[in-house]
Length: 319
Image (cartoon, rainbow, N blue to C red; front, side):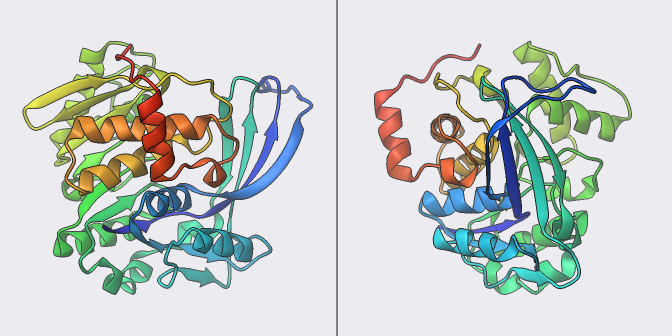
């Protein structure tokens, strides 16, 4: 399967702490590490490790981190011939704090990623020919995402949008989106942006209420909405159907990159023709393996590791 990822590449700067600091507090951390990341890069590497011929359209900074990012991403077999080296702007950097339970909080300076535009994507239109999948996020401009959707529509590729980090956006391109994969917080914010008011609480636990919120987004043209809820599982809403799915229970070490692994793994199966439930189960396994390891890209498993994990572990019910 041929896949296109239009998105971000960042350098992750990670410190482990016992607990995430409160406002005005200082925590003494340990185990500083840096490595490749960015939602686009994470998802592109995941697709490549799962067997897709993956082309990454991105804008890298010309700085001390850029060369390392390019080398690492290409090492996993991701095609970078349509990516751009930005001569004027530094590359993206993400500061990540990981607590002792594996939960993380992040601050991103997206740098050159924000300057990826429709022209850059149009210059990569050759890559869209015969592509089965286009995967998008919100760490690049609306112009880049919209142009990518238009090119995907011309090639017949399935479009999966992971709306993170959530922000106000040009909702006109939702009509091109086959699957939207927000978490609960992102779903709440998107509904607020589209409807101008709170229609769902971010602390909401009821599957029916979350599913109703997801259904409202299908009114803007999205065909399928899959809301991820971490260790609880996920909730799906689509044409005439809805479902709740569980997940795999593991000991979490670092949640960084898990959402990207889930989305990319789901997208690979969905674009390959799998049923929604089968794709969710595979994606949940991929994310579960990812959270048991440190880092973003280094933690992502290949297809053999995911299949082996699924054979040895039980898929739990939705909580």
